[in-house]
View 1 (cartoon, rainbow, N blue to C red):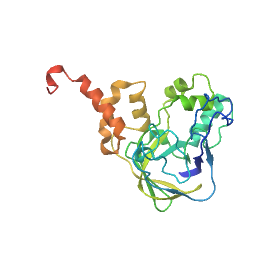
View 2 (spheres, rainbow, N blue to C red):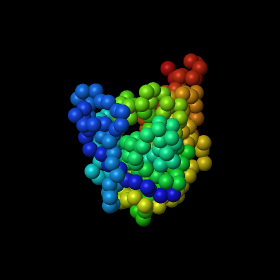
View 3 (cartoon, rainbow, N blue to C red):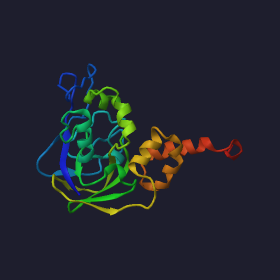
View 4 (cartoon, rainbow, N blue to C red):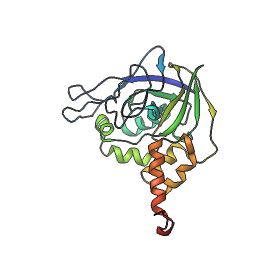
Length: 234
């Protein structure tokens, strides 16, 4: 298991040419255009969501309300899944095409458990927190018909990670899973619970403290809504 590519992005707007087939609404700015970079990239916890962006030095996050922050500091996606989409879409998808910071090799990212910890290289330690949920910007960037529906049905969304121990990352670094929780809540499971299989949401809470706080609150609200009225505190 290793890091195949480290990808960072800059602002992209309607004036820039998006990925093949993509279109942007006038004035839209986004940092989804991630490109591979050579050499080591510093990775650290960026700060609270809404105030801070990416955990990777030099990587742009434009919409801080929805992206970035400590619990979404790094986004990883498997090269094997990009290869699958290349075959289905009939087009090249270079590393970074899905806006991922880390393109991995030999690691089933969407099967990782929430709270799973990855040692990358000698120092960097990351923890899986949640799946990526597709948005309109992602669909516009790729320019594929029905993209949000197709990506959702595939249920292999890649993982957001928080930084437990800062360090550097570069292409070729080994990835070692140093902790894998015993619960059932994989990235794919958490994704399906939030999208196509909402009755799974209460079971997501088994992931405990590893879970992204926003996903935990969503699951708690859903579980509360299922309680009989007489069990709900007044």
